[in-house]
Image 1 (cartoon, rainbow, N blue to C red):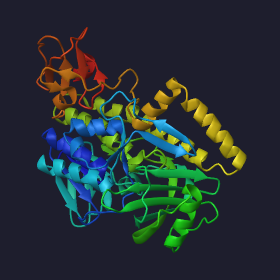
Image 2 (image 1 turned 30 degrees about the vertical axis):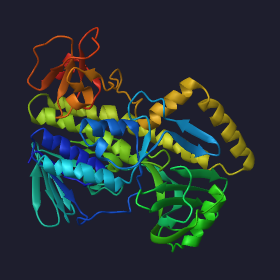
Image 3 (image 1 turned 120 degrees about the horizontal axis):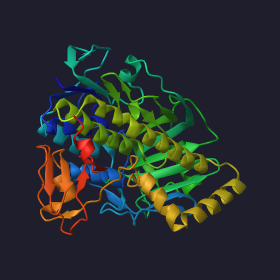
Length: 443
């Protein structure tokens, strides 16, 4: 086997599909039995993630509602409508819908997904990794842990997960609403709590609520009345919520591993970094981790690149994870300001900053992922080609050279012609970032 992935969430499924599309033998181990879960917390797919999903041909298959202005607190909001992409919005769709399209893609391309297998041990040699799970032993050239905040893979390779808890006793519930919000999302923070209400799209709504006055253990009993009270304080109404099908508490941490790689083992997604739910960054950052790592593993395993290329995964993605921790942490801390005076200052200051076009554009680029760059390697937009669009040309996990004329290229590079001539040829990596001939010829 070329690659063994542990964890069949959005990160692992994205990676599995990318590797299978590159012709590699890949297996995903998932400790959960196969079922459609409605308890996932992620609800927003940001613009850059939608672009990555478009490159994989699945973005337009996602149901959901588009939000172009994201409320933060009080009257402060962030405009996504000016993002330089056709996905100039946040798509509100539950995580299980994202997992569904990614799973179908991965399995169609030949990835094997095995449920009910929990990893119990892992050891490495010079040329392989040996993993023992519930019922058998597996051997692979590389292993990727995408198994979440409580990652077994991370523990088995001995990596610490430094950080701290930032919000305790966040309440979750799936409910029906008698009087749904006028907007797609309802969100606000007051001094002693906050609430967030988002639609599943099938008549059910997910509610997040936090009460500064009642900080209890995650396992403490939870009643709907407690959630309704906090929602009324934060949003002025509880929307007539009733008939909960599921309720729970959880706490939110800010943590990041010091390194994303230990020998032949990599970490991605929540196994490598976790943060507050503010800004809806978790699932998005994980999928983008996978998009970065997948083509690099494929290039090395298919003989197109030296193994040193794999070092650039951490070099590029660790700073992104750190930046997400800072930005989501800043949002949640601003939302949790306690005093009335502090909240007024918060609203005036943030409102003033976001009123400046350059700052607002940078903030929208950060939260949407559109503004992420790897040193001098910037995102390349969806250029119109004589044969379609760039993101369509990137399907298949190949390099693409945008040029006015034909060029001799290696067999893993496709040459495409733009509708509008370019001053000089543009080389694009499989994950949609600008690159150079030196990067392509790294073997």
